[in-house]
Image (cartoon, rainbow, N blue to C red):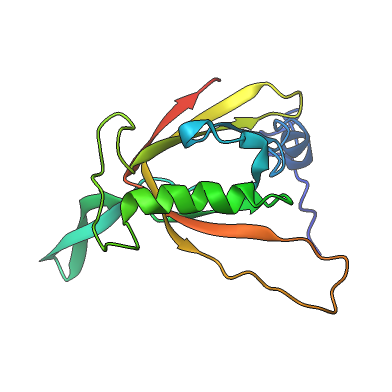
Length: 181
């Protein structure tokens, strides 16, 4: 088996192992905080979030020289999920139901207005990713957010130690990123 830790910059240069050891610490999946939820809901009720990012779709292709060249198309951002802690008063369920009721009044069937600057059902969610010392690394501002699909509650008489969490899918229009380093 060949030695994979060979010198990469010639005699006296750093080895590939030294380069690995010189890399910065990794970001950790549990080092984040939710900075802002719409309507002032408790940010500490968010247990998990899968942050989406703006993506550029692959657009038209051109054929030339027996191969294809691809060009970008529109950008899009995927829906995302949050998991909410549910307390004994149903505060998370109430919060999400009231927000969903701004999207559509389920009694009348009328849809609400998206609004501008948080006046309608489209809102802003802010999340901050942190380093190991709890310093900010990236702020993610999700724009035009509204609740779409709420997950089912798995109720079970035999699970006497289980707790309820609310899985909520949100639509999002876009994002803004702020990098601290």
